[in-house]
Length: 260
Ligand SMILES: O=C(O)C(=O)C[C@]1(C(=O)O)C=C[C@@H](O)C=C1
Image: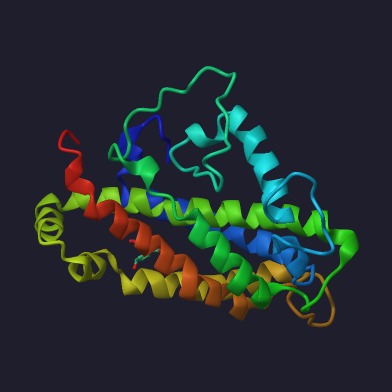
């Protein structure tokens, strides 16, 4: 998909291809994070282990904010598939603004569920993938850096729901206009759901997590670096439902943009 070519954005097959590629990134990032224990201190705003001068937040917040400040200045958050976790602290870029053609409805920047993604990641996903429950003080920075990669890859995938939603809206304006006018959330959810696609994703993830997590040349069968069931569970319980949540949020407001 090319954001400079809007017609490529409204093609569901193109979008799904990108979603499949993102599976690889997410699995590899989870594999890297699974090399560390849970490390609760990283996420604790009042950690007795990690004291950050003049900062109100966790160690992860601190490092992630520094990264977003840098990345915002090289235009990361100008791209329609990138959403900041700390929108209040990001900066303008010194590079010229990229003039993306309009690819989503005019309120799309107001849809950002990164707080929810971060909370679920810390409280639910990390316990599923971490090596064990505990601390490893010498690796605070390494684990938090990996957290950022996982969170950014999850966020991109989940907010891609807006492109999926726009493609579906354009494919059947009449149906969605009716559902939106009736504020029929269940109806919208039913129509955006494709169970066959979801099943295919979950089956593929098991295979990929097994393949990416093991050494293909090892003589004896070795355990996967990440539990394939954990990856599938993360998708089934959160990644797909949150993508759908973004789709529904986007569609519910879709009639606000009358020109599009
Ligand atoms: O591919 C789609 O049609 C989507 O809406 C995306 C997605 C997903 O998150 O992967 C979500 C809902 C559908 O049931 C199938 C897949």
